Amino acid sequence: MVTGGTGFTGSRLLRILSEAGLTVRAIVRPSSNREHLSDINVEWHEGNVFDDEVVQPAMKGVQYVFHMAAIYRQANVTREMYHKVHVHGTQTVARAARSVPGFKRMVHVSTIGVHGHIKHPPADENAPFNPDDDYQETKAKAETWLHDYAAKNQLPHTIIRPCAIYGPGDERLLKIFRMATRKTCPILGRRPCLYHLIHVDDLVRILIRSATHPEALNETFIAGNPESLPLNRMIHIIADALNHPVRIIRLPAWPFFIAAVMCEGICLPLGIDPPLYRRRVAFYTKDRSFNTQKLRSSLEYEPILSNEEGLSKTAQWYSDRGMLQREEV
Image (cartoon, rainbow, N blue to C red; front, side, top):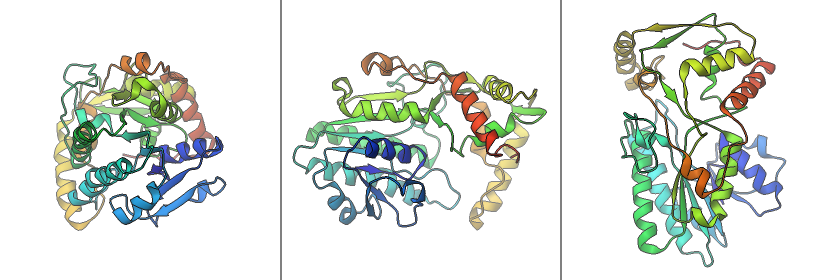
């Protein structure tokens, strides 16, 4: 069973599991778009992941659960809804899994965002939690609860903290690829802005391996490539793949922080997506770099795509579909 199966990563996971001949179920909201999955065999269960009446029937006879359901940052999402989906949803799925005879493993997908800014990179799985928004905070709470619950109730599980997920079809990091198409690309602040990536195809393979590998039982793994990249290097890799010369300039971050505070103060009470967020500005002032040796040694997994190859192929995919023509601020 997969929660969050219509999302960017979840849809790829569903497709691979179904094409492998497995019996696959997925819990989805009624409003979720499933058209891109209409050609595969999935038993759909409509409803909320925090609703027992939805989860219990979906869990009947299930051996493995990939719990990926999440709400990413949106202007109109309340703290209460983040808690319902991330914390209560995890609790509902875990309790249902524990009641299933012969259940084998729950793979819980969290985020490296639970660690926040890494002051002394690279950090590993034991780095302290330091979330800085509702999304990250409720993800951290869900992890903490699952760790304690699983230990007390002997629930077999694995926690995966993906780094920044990207690949063909992703729209969250599309703005970085569009930045690389400008003649002049501004970067805020003076930090290297280290960014740790994982291609979606690699992440799906990691999730599947973590469901069955004996060394993954009751363990936590940061899922990322062997090395992080500074933002300016990412921009140059993408630009080179597109044969597009780009010049990077550095701008002070503090004026943009002030502008972001004003935008949020005006737009958020009205339920409007602000044109500029503090977290978007903060992106340039933080480093996210991790030691992923545990993944490679315990799960014996080496990424199939390097940072350079993955970014280049993704850039070309966007370019072929005309998705890099519109620039974003």
